[in-house]
Length: 322
Image (cartoon, rainbow, N blue to C red):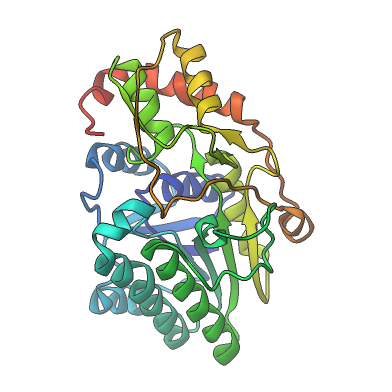
């Protein structure tokens, strides 16, 4: 297949692109390379992709409808995987407008152009943040109509638009709700990356809350593999990709990092943000039945791999802003 993948220089986007290329697909990746976080990470990921046969790159923002229109007019795509997004709960409270224009308006731009140019398969990244207040483990049928952050609200709007385009135009839509993705070359605004670097640099960790909150950590390779599998899904489905009822507390994550680095963390506690979820846990029966997917990397193994990557890349990671 010839696939348009948005957000290809992002954490999930880059690894998914590598999995697609390894599977024999052709990928045209687009990214606006914004400075929401340190661009060294995006440059690192993109430099790896540029060496791969079958990969093309265009610097395009999904908010830029004229640029997207020209792209769709030039290329005949078989599918779109939309991984471009403004992510992060706390940052969305500070700058909600850019979350709306990227996550919702950008998704609408893609859906409109897919219809205009006869592209009938759409995979979209969504978030476990929608499940705030739901009973665990979180199932895809839960009522998610009361999001507690602008980030979650903009993703819910993008999900609704995708369903509308499926209903009106018959586009095959698979929405993937990711659960706390971590791994090598992660996002420096997320706790796994920041905590590893703070401990490695012997700087204090800023910990919001008491650390007993839990997350269903999901290793990046499992996420990328599930995203590629979703290309084969038809109809309309919302599917969780998560660790599968094996949540780990933030304190346990810190302990794993300490063990792997052989260093003791210095911790500065801050009040928990009321937009943060206390616990997350994914029901993944649907992913198994529809995609044949289940996670293969346990959190402690994944953290060992992630810390090893940080050690191997310590020289340039020292320059990355946290």
